[in-house]
Image 1: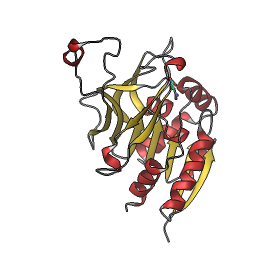
Image 2 (image 1 turned 135 degrees about the vertical axis):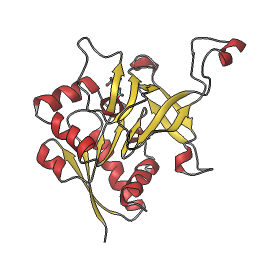
Image 3 (image 1 turned 90 degrees about the vertical axis):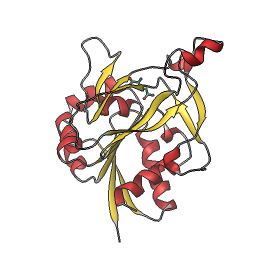
Image 4 (image 1 turned 180 degrees about the vertical axis):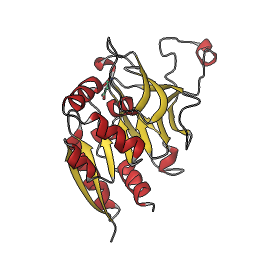
Length: 230
Ligand code: GLN
């Protein structure tokens, strides 16, 4: 029987929610999964896959650095090339570059050859929900409830990044580009196909939104299946 251990980085943010949804998804697809909270290099070394939750990326990276976890995390993603999925703050941490960071920048884990723009959609009060079509969940699947809280977007895919594999755009959020502008000109001002909100490169996956803040376990199930190769 296949048995996988999934860790959720538990330094700050929505880690309990991810642990619960991993368990729910595993039940739904009948997969034998052990979900653990990760706070040490030893716990990390037990994992076949890791989730980095939403929260505050500066805090998560600060605590990771203080607890000696930054290098083990980089090793897990880039040398051991294990499965990693970051949501919101987690996407920021997994990006090779981030814009709009705090003074002095912030330590990233990296692994995704992209540059993200932090807090792209504005402040906490400008959080929103959007019902999204996510083609990777299967053609014709029901819309997914996208929860965006001070969410980053992928503003550029970095060419010439170390590439055993290319960055794949998995989803865009249509219709919010140039949200301050109104009228006909809006459609023509920029790339109007929308903001990039989900990407994958090799075994590294990043999403702008928070599936962990919904009760919908479909993305967790999809990710678990990709880990066990079903
Ligand atoms: N913008 C936040 C950051 O920089 C992430 C927000 C979130 O995870 N909800 O960490």
